[in-house]
Image (cartoon, rainbow, N blue to C red):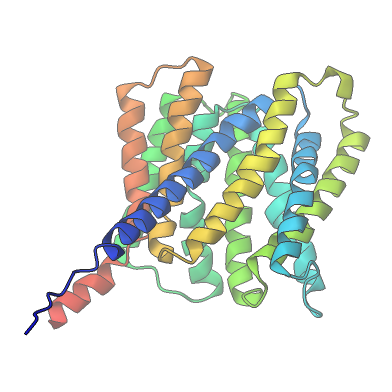
Length: 316
């Protein structure tokens, strides 16, 4: 009579941990690629005017986006009846916001730009309440108040007052964040059936062409004067930050919950502030670190459905 002992499947556990590790690494890759975007913009506009810089970035990115769409067998054209929405996305998600960001970084540090743009998810909440009639909970309102109060202290501590050119840069960055937020909400209402790849590919190509033509007309850029550093930054923005970050983010959409993945917008400003301070030779003051942490903590609160969790606990 023979006896058999069950052998535990030890292969499943390492495979599970390997998958978790890959997901964590890719999450950090997105945070790093988007966190370094702001420094890339800063270097690009050192010798390239804002319109032209945005256009060149998108023209560099478009062929790879088109290849990605071809590999995934996704259509480039928006569905019939959505051509007006295509124009809206091209203008309000790509052309205008990125031109404003490039202009803003002529006057504002890359780290502060990232912190200002981190308000975008808060603007999404506000537009969702106005256009989609979604409810804003008390804790979210508290997070918004904490975040903007901290942001005011940061701007004040940076010495950017009304009479300085920094104000125009701040307003440009806020306007870019507002446009992106509006585009996200309008997309949720009218473009939810359009795939993420289709949504990005053709608009980024059209925006690149329009911005380059506008730059040639309005800015008359001297391409011979563009420094190798700026060309390198444009290549990085077009290939790594735009295409690479997008592909990894697209992959993570299938592996993480939207709430967890949305924290990319809270984490990447941390990388941006540290990398920008290192590159620009600025010291990180205690006040800046304190208010930046409070700002990001406040905005993080807006992403957590605390009321739902509390109501579930009281029911149990």
